[in-house]
Length: 321
Image (tube, rainbow, N blue to C red):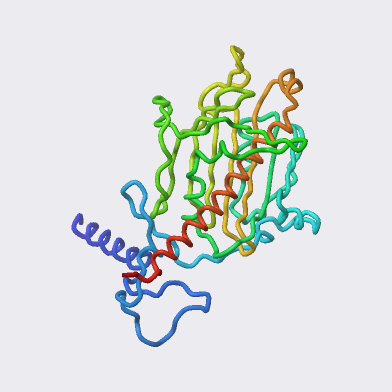
């Protein structure tokens, strides 16, 4: 009886394995439909392993080699004509509201994006959403380019805001930290050649108005884009006064290459008591810091584009005697 059960179990296991494990020589999916007839291609013919796999923490994750590039209209189909024009403008769309208000930017329910609900779990008192599409200047960028653009933490401090025709630095220093416990500044790593599945980093922003801001950054790679979620892992104090408890600030930046360029969508929220918020004119101050982060992302994408073009140029440049 036991031998029969074992044989039956083994047969079922083999049956499901044959169903769910694709043949070794199966063709990758094609937008022209399934391949019928003809020769089965060899794995040795123009096979690019990098198009199928990337590594993370010692593991290898399979990635679909063919992903349809979306339009930003597919992700945000409810935008008016005026809003669509502003999205592709220099500053994009911005909208601020308080806890009793409602968002203006609503991604399609099938888009896989729901940043708002993640931010709202922290019960913020003030929320800002932003959306901009940055057109390509040269070649199209991929997710590895986006990841490397988000890796230049030290460059955030270089972003300036113009107020009444004068430039101001919002952050006087921005740096990576060794860990949450060992808050020692470390250098940004060299641009990666392999895309990680996810990563956590620790950052310190020195803000002359609110002091040191210690953030945990969680980076995750999705099917279409990369999410960069930041939250404060320590209290925020102004002189000797605590103005915000830990884990009460949240900012999520989502970046996706789309047909029209690079889509950058962010939702940020924080909680401050009402008597403090009224004294510091919170919404414009939040908006300036979000502007710095968005400008940093856009500059990083431009630098990454230049780097890849230079690398390509030097690789193809003929040797001289």
